[in-house]
Image (cartoon, rainbow, N blue to C red; front, side, top):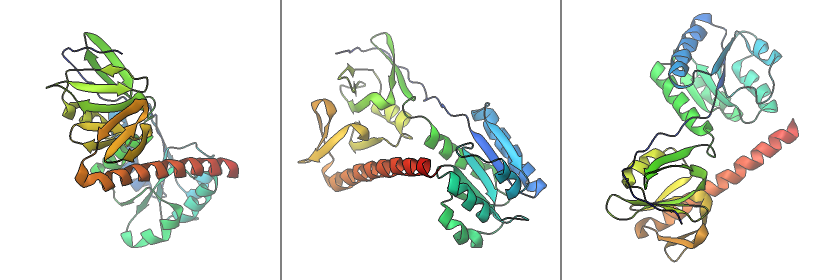
Amino acid sequence: MQSGSDRVRSRPVTRFVLMNIAIVDDLREESDRLEGILKDYTARNDPGAKISVFRSGEEFLDGFTAFAYTVIFLDIYMEGITGIETAERIRKLDGDVCIIFLTTSSEHLWGAFHVHAYEYLVKPAAAEKVFRVMDDLYRMHTDPKAATLDFTAGKTDHHIVCDDIVSVCTAETNYLNIVDREGNVFHPRLTFSNVSKELENDTRFLLINRGILVNMDHIICFEHGMCLLRGDLKYPVFSKKLAETEQKWQNYTFAKIRSGQKRTQTKEVI
């Protein structure tokens, strides 16, 4: 077992994604405006990101290959093939790429529902809305196995991969117990709110009771009001939210299974 206690510092989780972004719009003024917004965003958040602009669906599809892009901003109405037709052809090759439709009116959105668009932006898209969508995409694409929780305890710097964290719970005043998959226990002098704020955008972590946060990838089951995890860990679940908490875990597990099946089916099609 490893343990320690000392003044603690925490650092934000690092992003590990370099976006490859495509803009497909036949109106130069609109595409130039969106490109400017995205350049402003990536300059602040991802200087290595690449932004490519295409003036038609035909031009984009001519050189398109599966998994080449992270996100595609696609105008619904263009000369030649429409954005919806372009999206249909994209989906035959790539079931994972995020498609964000650009439209002049929300009344056209239902026609694009079947291609599973990630988002719809009414033109001209406001910078704050584009920024919000990009923030969501980065959170979704950040490699969960690479993200770390960084702190100091016992005069030693620790960089624990979030994938390896089993649980975080309140211990003594101003101290926490952080348990990893190997059974190591760390005691940083850090408030629970500090750590939960660090992990709030990581969908694997679930608050099961006041001061108790668990990694759903390490849950074994719920039994008699308790949450059982690997390493023989057992924590009480807030009784009034027991059914809701267990349902969240089941939904998370089901979503992981569906995501894995989707990737396998896409590769088989290609």
